[in-house]
Length: 343
Image (tube, rainbow, N blue to C red; front, top):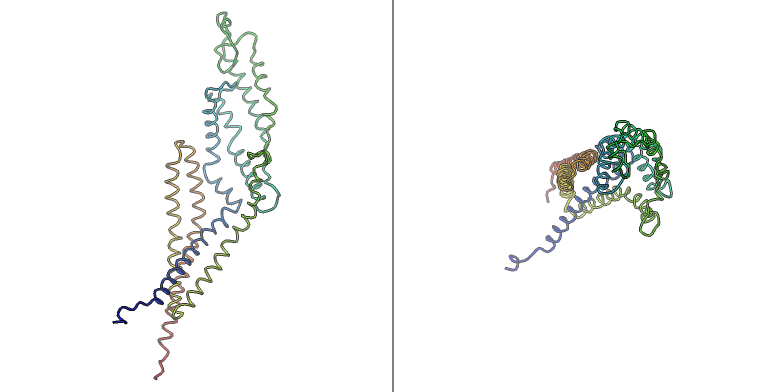
């Protein structure tokens, strides 16, 4: 009766230990692939540039920013009406996708140079003075054209004429000429025209440059690059431990094979899961279709780059699993061929 109700605690503990080690190996292999995306995509400035360039960011963002500025300016008195289609077109021609791309790529180079320890601070200098002066000049030409198309004010209109704004005016007073209108709009605020920005200009609440609040980021960036190698060593140690505590090498190799196969399948499925999650996030995040479209294309480009790594790693792990299983079978067959000694 004692043998009937006895519990094999050693066997239960060993089975639990195998489950823990197997799960840890699967997770370790999974995060190796996950961290490789950081190493081979996120940490590479050229890859980030390619993702941005492949999305609709540069083509769509200028219009999104302009329309947002126009909405924020509603109800405020401004000399230049942002709702005017002509002004909008001038702005989009001057602050065009090429300018946005070149400016963004300069920021990327400066930011990654700091992360990689090449500079003591992010070198992010933007000089929009040329574009601002071009915008002011084109607006002044446009205003002059508007003035030339206006009829001269009659006596009753002059009596009711308040402050004059060419874009709101119904007529042109005799004291104002189209040339004067052009000159007025070409004389913009010099501080605005000579707008220059650098990383030093972005301040935190304490008045210090914002990047100083993230002074440890370059060190963390460097450590993150070593994560795949650390995980690979841990995975190897887990595999050796599984073989060591198994009853023989054959059962150990088979256990490792199953874990590696499971990790490979999960990694291969990850791009499909990521794409579905990204689509759900974008569809529920914004009522602005243009902004949602930009984010959607950015995510699509990133997932496309990441998928190459996930598929490669997943297939590689599946092949390794198959190789380990074949190796275990070969060892088993070789053992079967060895004649057993008679006792």
